[in-house]
Image (tube, helix red, strand yellow):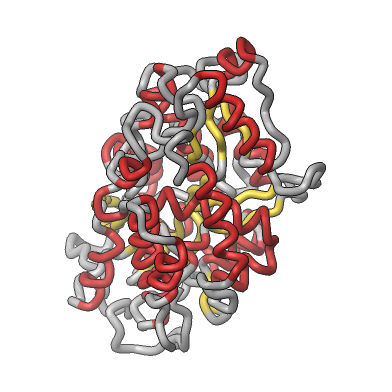
Length: 439
């Protein structure tokens, strides 16, 4: 779900051989690997969660800190993906890191920087998290991190009242979504969709979400999983087909970029800006994750079935598909140090007690099975929790977050920027695939 690239709202895998548990000499060893430096009861956490969201994060564990005599020092950065490796290599990692990408956590574990999760964390993961979610924090059979928050991606945000006034209906298939797009454009004479890939150093990630949604819905879970592992390369016709389908919307100047400009403006429009266009009515359709309700609220809109803005999931390719098919994201908390205080904080963050504490403060959700959906701060977040907790849901983690960083947050992000900038699809796919590590 939620990277620093996405957490600016005012309201709201390189997998290889591992250093075995008990090995010494790595920065994560128990001889003081973390950079807290403030004593055994000071635990430093480094992550991507910024601004008001960071304040809520600190509030979520404040009472626990006082009860347990531990001081959690949280540091936020939108340069996390690059800086966490620099810190680890320099011997000054944090005690804990909130990884927005399982692939990056796996890379840190593979290089011997992380320590395995303690037994108490493993027990929480086994009891409160699904096997799929547990796998995202596991590398070569060893659990290194527990999930934290989550998001359900692939929501299409729209105005219920505008749909009702014009007789537009929520589509039930991907082709129906394309037909609706054409219908709205013909009716209004204006582009229906708005999109923004801009996100500072992470510019391009919203585009990867589009592609991932379509790969999963069009080609299924096996192809999706093989794509993540590079057994199906980006140059495969099945991945090219997903780009072609998304291009029927994002590369058509008749359909984008409502309120912001032409197709190329997608690459420079900050991803949060379309929220204001949705609320004002300049934009009628927007693709973004469940967390986006906070941006819409900040823009002055209400998010509800009978509110200003509501959302439906990107529909399947086949009519009548059973159970939701969704992509999503989240964070994994990994440790560079195994001091007792660090283990206590890591255990708490993997618990339903923390999940309920943070979710009750608003703006986020978790896939922790001990979470009470009633604690969600909005209808869309409650709906997202229900999807995550439904055993019939087909869920896959954001593919770019699972891929090695050189691809997932490297050539894939860059490729999406180039794609909306006019580079031919075949060239983009070759460039993305070229980023895949040779071993």
